[in-house]
Length: 291
Image (cartoon, rainbow, N blue to C red; front, side, top):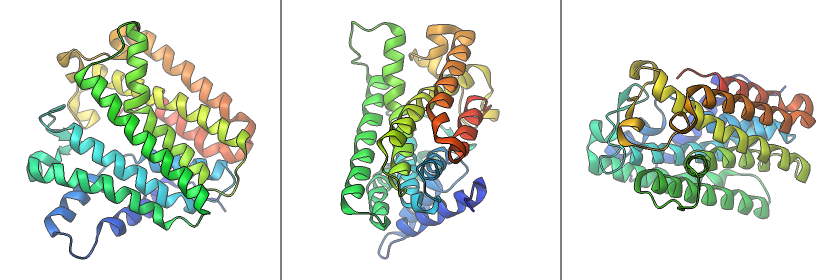
């Protein structure tokens, strides 16, 4: 029987993260900060995508735990560093003080560094041919680089001048948020037993649609929900003059784009049949989330 219970999946992924980061000789304060950043409250969207993509590719799910843990650690690293005063300067994350507010800027920087490097060590636990592990490694490397590029565009500018505002916001979103979401699904699929180009193509198209959709919903929450509902400071994008979907298309136009992307995701995985049920549930949940 394939496990689809979210809490059971999260427990397996969190246990893998805890095992990877708890290394002999590591300063206890560093382990404590890493755990605070990676194992606190959160939706665990990326490892859940890895799990359900693995199932959609013919696996049972547990095979994806090393990649799910790896991608969640990269995500946690990005949040820790994005929250720093030099970037977004946030005080609240997941309803708690950001790591640099809790443990100081120096420890936040070092904990983020550790999360990024240790993430790749989780992939050593994959029981796959070396060629498949290399493909997974390349996916995570490319996605991490894309995520950082997106943060550069979002925070420091440098977007191509010939692009329209919508094209610019898509470029930011597809990198800053979409790259890691795409990699989560692709890596999960690659951790399963099937290596069908058709299946992988379906999962790629699905993940590209929900990656953009996820960030549009995030933009909508930033302008429609109070901070206490979302667990982080809202309204900050407008304050900083950042490009967002609501800023470009308005709230109604952004919601229409979410519906369009959800339909695109559903269509992409329809040929995979019942084994894609977990991915389908996730897409619909992410499209309608309120925090």
